[in-house]
Amino acid sequence: MKKPSLSPTARRADTIPLKEGLEALVRAYRLGGKLNEVTVVASWERVMGKAVALKTQEVYVAKGKLFVRLNSAPLKHELVMAKTRVLELLNAAVGAEVITEVIFL
Image (cartoon, rainbow, N blue to C red; front, side, top):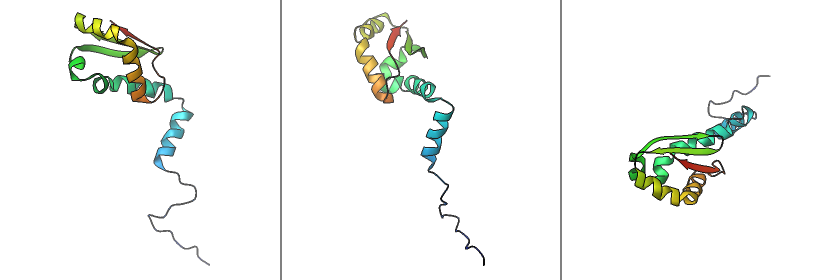
């Protein structure tokens, strides 16, 4: 007796959705933290706006701290005054507590 052949679109019992597979891969290689850090840096312009992004020279994360180098002293002063709000916005954009402190250079 022959086994019935499966159509190319039929799902097998051992297959999983791509999203689950990628999440398992990220967990297996313990890349979740680094992936979230990269997401914070990539979302800087979207979260802070075009005007702030134009005056930003460098954005990077080290040991849970976000370092932002600005080329405008007045903007730096304003952002230092609103540091907690910036921290909340960036962590909300990622959906996790990734950044513990924001440092403006």
